Image (cartoon, rainbow, N blue to C red; front, side, top):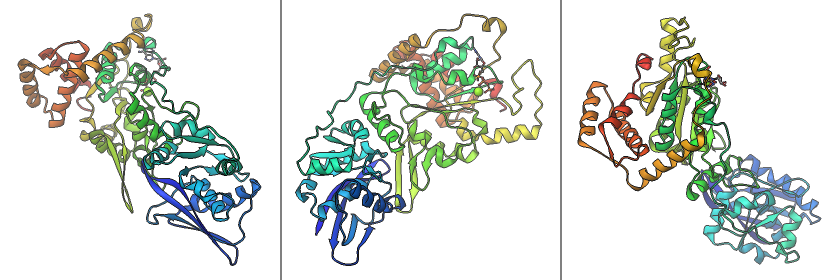
Length: 487
Ligand SMILES: Nc1ncnc2c1ncn2[C@@H]1O[C@H](COP(=O)(O)OP(=O)(O)OP(=O)(O)O)[C@@H](O)[C@H]1O
Ligand SMILES: [Mg+2]
């Protein structure tokens, strides 16, 4: 007897249809899964066997073969447990096979038959919607996430429940499809805590308004980390499409909250400097999205930039330019989106004394050279805004603190709207200034384009119709501050 259930495997973020076929024949009892199933997927045999017994159903006694088709597509993870169990139950006539035809299923089985959530349910549900199934059976915890895809998602707690539902013995309401509006409240530290550092605050606002990459450099304790962590608080919420894109990636990494699955605020990721290249850009045996993709439409903070492994830093060059990461696999390439804005912080030298009038730098020339070598020119070239932060003066520290995040965010939102609706155009004088600066400051072609973009952001923040020379001049001032020239 043959029965078939439907599910999807993911290639990167792309759902691919998988037919789970179960066949039972007489002979020595056995249970085999074929069709390029990885280890976790092979282990489904034990969970399915145990789950079926726990649901007070009969585990068939014959020779069971489960085929996951198409065979050339790699099947990873435990999400195939539920469709495998349903196909086996269909093949042993414990379920009407017709009910399986219009139904997709996903979820991991516990040994007692309960259903556990798995990563990537949103992308799987999107595959089910495209296929036009009538319903998706999924773990109850993931039902809200699946519903974001616009497919009727039936929340299942236990295998027995799924069986009763498909037999028509139990009524279950699909999760209502409601897309929450993207106005999640911003929480997190506020800019009001930061004293002084007017120039760095200005650069942070520009970075937020234009999505520019920002490097904050200076001696220890000047508020670099503090300021960088306040960037998410001045960014506008994600629009509906971006929110779904980010949620899809976070879902695969198992990071979404079952009760509020939609990620509606720009993500903020701050990996530790010991992170491997695979952790930063993705990859590894299970092909997970890396920090660069988890920061898609948000901020990637590399705190203590110069402490990161050089290969990890270099791996960011491609996504910084293209907005995606492409990971090579034996069977082709997988692409994850990675359009993030990069914020880096660093000291000016390994001992931290440089740039601090009250301290002596004790670094040897060799140590300093090694430190600089970590940051290739190519990487530094990708920072649109470079700010040297001086030590805060005592009188500044005694002040009440700066402008809070909320009004800054309002300006950022207004500037973004202007940039989207009518981006300011460069005046002739601004063009001249930029052209001269290319030779004087030895700007690369990329540097030229990036200064142009920053100047446009400055004009938009000033609600100016056009980009004037003064805007270009300010943009140029963030390109190569004197303090950093020899770093
Ligand atoms: N400009 C500032 N305004 C208010 N508090 C500040 C400022 N700068 C530093 N501080 C205080 O010092 C602490 C350390 O700041 P922060 O961690 O941002 O320093 P940093 O520049 O990142 O130093 P490091 O180079 O050692 O990482 C902050 O938690 C804050 O209490
Ligand atoms: Mg710091």
